[in-house]
Image 1 (cartoon, each protein chain N blue to C red):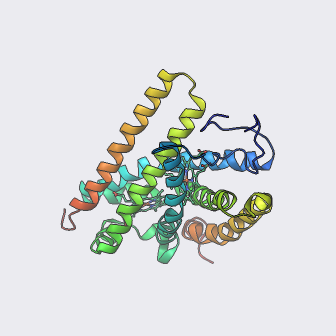
Image 2 (image 1 turned 120 degrees about the vertical axis):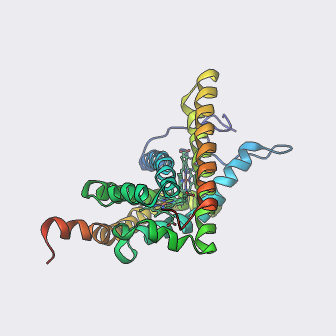
Image 3 (image 1 turned 30 degrees about the vertical axis):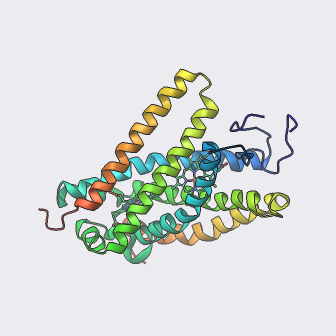
Length: 137
Length: 128
Ligand code: HEM
Ligand code: HEM
């Protein structure tokens, strides 16, 4: 491969070449695309419901969420969206850190902070969906 | 060529890549905050309604338009990136697809902004 490959979109991550065995970077590349496709429906749907559909953001309150989370469908929607968006975004930022943090030490710490924040957020969001109590006062 | 490094080449394809990167990180940072604000639903109905009330103020309402615009650009451009990767004619049409992306973005955002800010505008300037 030449030093400046003739890529149509040279600024996106190049398609990883085949290597032997399990290749983390290749799996991550596939995951970004597969999760992106599903997130189109989940996130754009969520944004449409929350911001535009009958009254948009003005009608959101505790009772509104209680109504939605009484349905397993929306619980599952939110849970999937939480996990996929967090993993997709975290993996994206992991790659970005790799691009800009050139020293191994900076990279290690930035990624450590990132993984900690994301793991805590995924855990919190999951707990909130599963332990939600509509009768809370 | 490094396996994961990113090359800078200039042109519109670079700017769409910069925008994809910035919108992706911005949405991730919003999501951290958003899971925290949604978690208040486990604290008390009052706590949740109080935080959600900030979403309904004019300035935050405007930021929501920005967030939706960012997500929509990232999603459409993500599709374009995938078309370049997987569609045989994708690499040749990537520039045209960028203009299609911008076009769809405008067609959705213009009425979208209207509906998202309708209530705020009516409250500030009175209903027509
Ligand atoms: C201004 C725009 C937004 C509004 C008004 C909004 C509103 C809400 C509301 C009311 C809930 C409570 C659950 C429900 O009713 O389904 C929720 C949950 C959630 N939203 Fe959003 N949302 C917005 C943007 C986003 C974006 C851009 C994303 C993804 C990147 C997102 C991801 C989520 C997730 C993952 C949950 C579940 C949180 C948890 O597990 O505790 N939201 N959102
Ligand atoms: C709505 C549907 C979405 C689609 C179709 C999509 C698509 C993509 C694709 C294809 C990539 C890989 C680009 C590359 O390898 O060069 C990517 C990167 C990324 N995405 Fe998304 N995405 C979506 C939603 C999200 C959300 C909700 C977040 C935030 C939580 C996010 C954050 C990121 C980040 C931070 C990157 C890394 C950008 C870079 O390396 O320059 N994306 N997205």
